[in-house]
Length: 182
Image: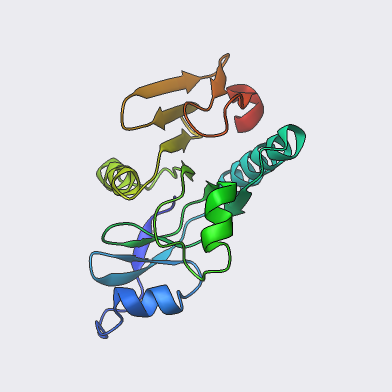
């Protein structure tokens, strides 16, 4: 996830429905306003690519099916969001795989946190995902070398020297924190 800056300040006629029909690249629809996702760093992008690759390779090796996406739009109960990395189960791919925007949260989402992100906004986003059918949210904090995994029932924190594993979605997936954040 990256810090959002306002894209449309004078034209507030761009509605959530407009965003759902044709979301402009690198934007989210938050609190009634179209905002741009920016400030992605090389480190952020590298971790995003690595995690998407790890999840994809795990799906291939276990033949669990489904799809892994990066920066793909979804609708929470009140916003239009773009998770950094997301996994969609085979059942949801069959149901929604051809839609422009997923009409709910992805079951498994990772947000890579930048130094300029405000934590209140990050946790607001986590709560939206969980309230909109999200099951497991990973918050990756590269600068602190922490990864928080949040579900409705529990929260777990992983750091250097530890192995992170999925809690609910993609059973059996694990990766060393050091490997992911290297």
